[in-house]
Length: 316
Image (cartoon, rainbow, N blue to C red; front, side, top):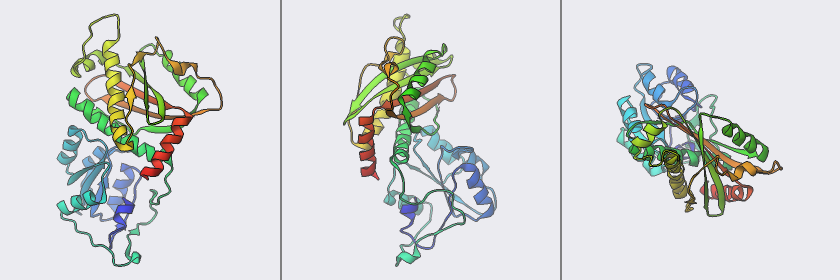
């Protein structure tokens, strides 16, 4: 946003890391346009919209989000947002959104007219972004599009926090997998995927008393009562919907193998506790109206990490 808005003159930019800081900013400053994310810590975008207006000043709100569920967009507009801009977007789309809500910006004649920063900006506005942070945003977009696919099938809203992207040691992965094996109320599914030099495995954990009901709402049925057919189908949808968007953004075609119940087979459970680190992405989907939680952990080896880092540098 700082990069895009740096092309215009006469602006003062203020940054907030979460919804609470955004509210505090609006209380003290007359803000013309609030660019609001939805998935944030402490106070999310929906909660911010519910708190507005804070004062008599007419602040216009443009929601910028990877959560592109129809329900999410409708909720934002119903709560008073002026526009919704889906991530990722470009500068032209941003300019169009501003124009649509009656905001016109002028291009500076000299570089000295670039936007000023408000006091104590709390968000980074430079290009110093490492590949983990870059991939987190890519994963966030994939997560939002995946939620939209699942929501369309399910017919209801899916809650989605920010994904966690990190490097984990082999020992930490083994501990995570062993913890999952010991959870009696969780059904765990493993699914391998590969594409463009990236090799990995997804671990999908489903819990809640409405898992079967959730599966039926998605159109999955149980034929053999002795097999976890519904759970496997749900797991496959969770992984494939995420990888489809990831594939589009990274320009890599991914292929997946048939998901398998963790108890039957789990190659990652045989990881040697060496000095290797693994690239991991962890996220959670939660149904709003049913007792269902789905946690997904993507694990990729060192060779995959090099490929991801190279692609992120290209995207950046």
